[in-house]
Figure (cartoon, rainbow, N blue to C red):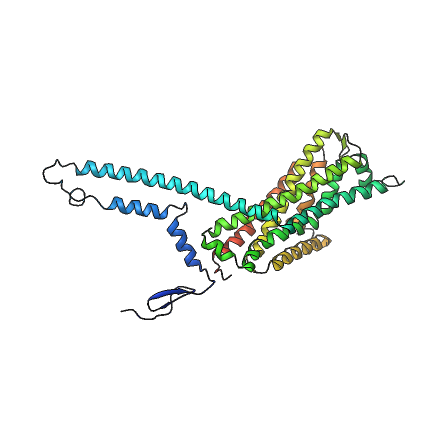
Length: 371
């Protein structure tokens, strides 16, 4: 006899013996049941079916423990062959499921990257960042002939490659973090605000997989931002200033080829720093459904860190602040390259990614999705 009851799982109720889910709610328990049903490699149901088939022996063989009437007692051999066949079938199904899971991951990442780099807002951001080194180069070209100008202006006027390092010195403090924060802060909050997050999880994309894809997408965009700045500054420098051997901060002169190699190292380092900032923005993004909140929160953190760095009494704290490491790329302008500084910076970036990635996963994996 069916009765109407309440008190089912979170977000569900029963009416007339049928479960009814609250509209727009994807509980954690439902996501976990979906994961268990599909398995980590998408082969859960197939494995259960294969196991169920192997557990039911043919009539008159393993199920009765005796051979069929009028035949030789070969039940044991037949059962062993059946078990081996079932094991091979399960292994093949598991391998195929793992391949499908990997393919689904890359398809999801490719789709996310396509959406990111086709979005007009993100393209405009890249265009603005590409214009800034041009403005810097033209300005330095205009004032480079004035008497009494020296320092970095003289260095850039003397060699085109130095414009890249100068552009990074300006842009890593504010504009590049803003660009990365816009994409990373919108990663989860934007989906929730648009009401598409629950559909992604119902696919099911898997919470951990979706979070990893969102971070990798933000990291790729971070490197795209860094590469656009470097390429724009390099082309502008080659057009406006002479090319040739580069004089480093230590006074050593290196060839142009080695200078280009050091620019590539600089791009890798700065890109890693922007990816660490993306992890911070992503962690804030899972706590809100308004993307502007995550973006603004990330920028507030950057500004607060910049203020703390400017207070001499807090010099002991400065090495642990993320923006402090952004400008350590100048280690490539020394001879030899200060590998220790770059190594410490990369370790700090990795620690930030691990810390804020864990915070994002802990929050997102236990969160009921209501939008």
